[in-house]
Length: 411
Image 1 (cartoon, helix red, strand yellow):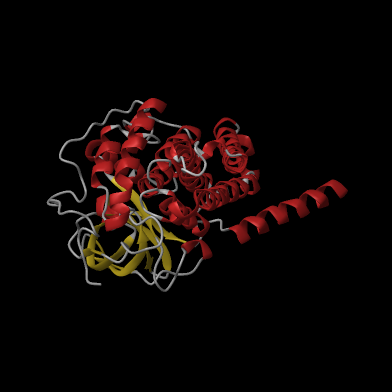
Image 2 (cartoon, rainbow, N blue to C red):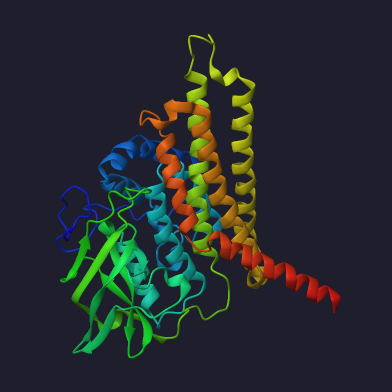
């Protein structure tokens, strides 16, 4: 497919700021659960149309900005809400029950800001400058690291995207993959090879030479997430927006596990599990076959299936909230939490996969039709298996932890 500035969305005026709203509401107050639920319901009503068309839900982004969700983890000193990881994952979980595509884009933005709030490894002043942009302009951000040749950056490797020094800054060339929420990003936090090392540049949306490639709308899952490719052709980046210079891969310096992205992804897909339980229960209460003469909700096997789904989702939710709470309230334990984070990611994504599969089985042939959201939920849940840590890596982490615990107890 050829390049497309809008990545399968309606035309918008990107003059000046890329993906920025005409009006913003920089209110830092935390959204109540009722307000989040109302947003989620609104997104659920729009989700089918965007999934069918592969179109981008600009109106969802407008609503989230108006509610101030993009400000949740931004430090209060910079004008944000200063939300904890627990507060953030709860918000993502609720939004995910409405539309996982929208929740994933929100999760990407929030985990980047939240991680940097706790572990600011950028050059002096760069993170504050970005936060000021988020508050003043409702800018959304995402890490842009995956490439067609490289695959997932979590596996390591040097990016093919390159940066070279020019007067006043740098020029970037390359192509990035799976850039979620690309149509509305204010800043693309782009990894590039620079002097033989990996550096990160905050590339402003709408920069000359930055092009979105419309290659996502027919994806199996999350068709409305705008996770298209991005081409950079001689894109100029001012010197002050080289935010992390000459660092080895991996780029974390603290040695702490990646709690913010791991739990943000887990919350996104757990939201799908909640939606599967909700939507199947609603269907079963309304479905009255003439041969039965009563709602199928009264059938024992339907109740058992819903109970099984609910149990898996609820158990994963308890684990998710507990891990986020401990990360927030017990910072002294963070260094040893990698096994727990891997466990939570596995439980949440696999609960969503199992719940959506059983929902479709319970609904029968009707579940295959688009008049019900179950087939979309099943497709969207599958994407959770691709986020790090993937299941085999999670098992490895947990296995090593088990071995280490035996070794330490024998000393």
